[in-house]
Length: 255
Image (cartoon, rainbow, N blue to C red):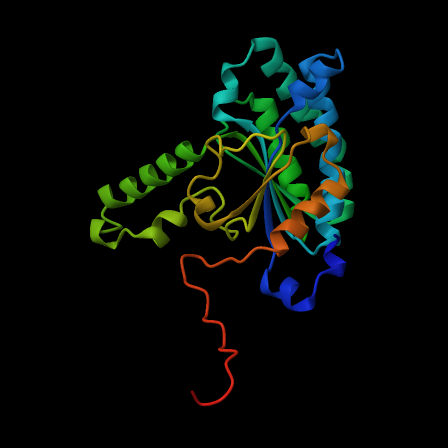
């Protein structure tokens, strides 16, 4: 069922502004076709454009894609080098198209293990797309634990410098130092390939995020699959730890 067919009271009760996606299954998709893992990653990159189109269709203005985790550095050297080359090629190829589409690109995660050349390329594309109204976050060399640790380290530095008292540290202070501090937490996280785990992605931000697990591999995740995930999200009740309001009594009379 498409979002357009949903009752208005359901659609408006479930604002959907930020979607996070764990793009899983590229390697398995490639293996099933007798292709290299890198060929699977190339096929996965092609899906990003279609997902951005689907987000625009549903009025979603923030998308965060888990592209390369902190743990992915442990993969074979050839695969890591191929992924970094694919990342750089995506930035070069899509820069003008992102500008045309009004998409602002932000790469979140550590950059100390990137080459200086790749870091400069990231900076150029971020600057060129900065005016875009839709936000695309690419989490590259990112881990949820790393994100929290680097936030804690920055806060500790402020305490040591005398700019912050320990008793003033609360959730709001910590959130201000996370990588996605300037955007709201994801409303929905989609993970493909049938896996049902977070895999160290946005650990803090996922406190009340809804999850949808798609059975298809990421290279097969198209606009229709995205619409199905949105429809599933719209059918849920988000309580954020609160109780639902009591249903009005249907009994008649003063009983």
